[in-house]
Image (cartoon, rainbow, N blue to C red; front, side, top):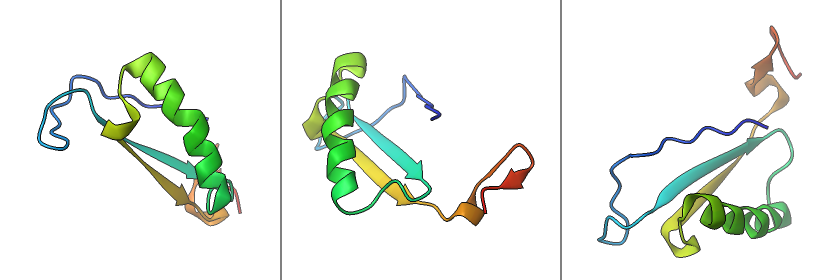
Length: 78
């Protein structure tokens, strides 16, 4: 797992500049359908606790990658 946080970004969400965020979770086969609800149920409380972003001010995008769409240590996972 890799986490990248960009703080101090200007963002307007629902007409205010209160803390808000946009997250992306990418996985090879680990997202989709019911899994996304399970991930969301785990992630939203963690993000609220550690970053102070309420669940109603956050979007999480789930992206299913093919094994040939991502590489590590010189080659793809395909």
